[in-house]
Length: 383
Image 1 (cartoon, rainbow, N blue to C red):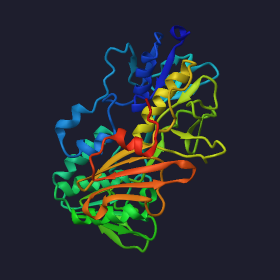
Image 2 (image 1 turned 180 degrees about the vertical axis):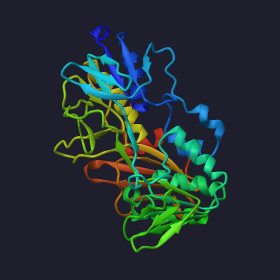
Image 3 (image 1 turned 30 degrees about the vertical axis):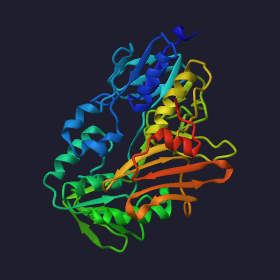
């Protein structure tokens, strides 16, 4: 059964390469083809803001190796999917057939620049990271628009270079995800490391052409040598018009990574989980979910039973020299149920207990093994 099926993966992303590895691990001996538009091939995107911005020597350590898997890689962007005849067309005019299709095209950085406005900086690709790293060498000031994980990691890289940096957002750093309890502590720690935070009454816009600053809702203009937009992502679905696969949230999937179209599966940042009667529609663009869904999509493409959960509630970040590891459902609301240690000292283990028996565990400045955190949270890891 598995040897006869041809599997086409569109997207040389973490989800896409994970799916390719899982297909072979599950014993699939048929044809596997990856269509990817990334010039540099597959690499780890979380490392871009965590290591590549700081050290050029890490550029070659983040690549995802596909050697020995007997996978054909096509370096050309997918431009159209024809689900009625089970083919995908690429930018160079070629057409590839499939028995099963896995969509793993990821997401692109959301941009704030007006049409034609030049000079906006984002961080989504290796080229973006290299460009930003070069600019940091001469920058004397920086503005970061967006106080999520990426924005705070970029600000940390700026501060590590001695570049004064201000982060702007309508909410305090990470408040939408980690809640006010941790957001206050993170903001104070960031300030002690030279990261200033400015809470705005509305959304800021980019100023200048090329961009040289931001304009606040009250008309105040702030300028800097370096302005970086970290305002989230948009699913890469422009090659899927008229297929019924994608909408404004991305490609909808269920708990087995199946889509609304037969023989088509999806994984990673391009996806969202469809409402299931218990949970509303939700996007969860974390690397751990890309891995979990890549494995699930591979199993489903081969007609096998699911190999694990569709969502792996684990992520980590490093901000102002502080490592944060989180296992469990998000966002966090209210005060933690238990606290072991002191957040103000930069070392604490915090637990939030949710309805339904679920828990979220946060290792704040503690180098605690993920397996131990999973045990405390009662989380089932993606295999």
